[in-house]
Length: 445
Image (cartoon, rainbow, N blue to C red; front, side, top):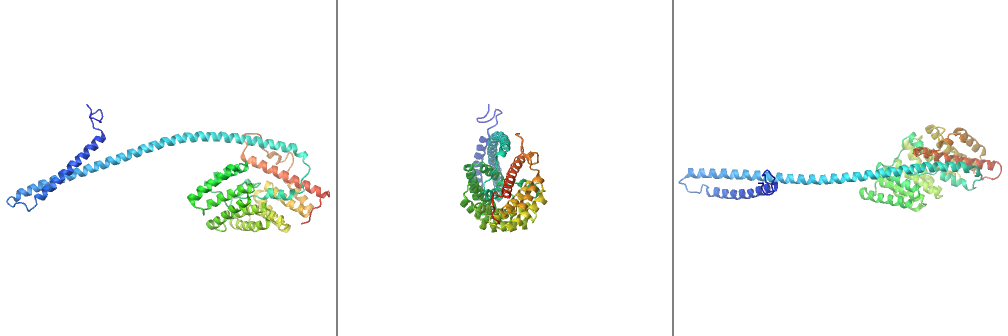
């Protein structure tokens, strides 16, 4: 018959063994106390008539005490081992429960990922179809558009050239990225958040983009402190979202804060500092504060020239922005110099057929029109049309995306770039023809 709490083989349960061992320890401790008392009694102060007998008794008592001490040590060791085994078993159970929970979470995350991928696929397919519909509507409606508002010059120049770092890219930026490494990149741990915020902002979903960015900023400040370079990056991103909402004061405050953090933590000649200066200059330019924007843009240009080299595409981008600021102040001599240098960089780094080259030529031609230099503007438009074959069968016409769910993202961006460039050249050509016919008298620069 099995012992109570034991197994069928008659072995007692572990808990019963531990309880028995503890009971034995108590008994051994009592025996040890008695043996010590006996040794104390058998000290040399005992009667002298039997010294040999006393010595033998003391020896026996000492052996008994040594055995008791050894037994107590072994018992305490066994109890300690049992406690350790118990702790290991508890840890094993905890890890097993954690592994079960993680497995359940993994299954849930896989299901969520599959759903997200399905939604992404549907969204990409919808974007491709919308892009194709837009292209068809544009081609269908183009012959009916014959006039351009007289105040389009300034609006076009602001919309077509001003672009900030760390947000939506300028035309041709994909080619620029391929041509040379950027001087500043979004930190890896913020890249996904940056893409999400920009995507929501591009869709006009600011009620999602702003809280998302603010929560990430709050969490980062708690973990890393306010004076951290990644905090400055988030401040830049949030500022650009505010800028798109025309909340210029909030955007300006955030960019100035980000600029101070980056100058303190990264140094005054870091590419990230140049990016913030450029964003601040862009913001001032969109508000018409060109005189305040110009020195910021020039400082960003100096940093990029020193850090990236005078032939880097980011330097050309900065030259474009600086040219636009000068153009809006009537400094046409400086404008032509800046545009000319930017054009040479783009042609060497990206090739003469890149849309960024055509865009820069269009901007320069627009500057010529403002000064009444019709011949120079006409020559530039001819160069653009000749180089890029802007016709129904040209490269630009073939760059649109077919209505396929597998249309690559680069193709969508390229189609948008070409469409904007076509429209800009069309407007410039109409203005040139109109002024050559004497329908409008431009103000000389």
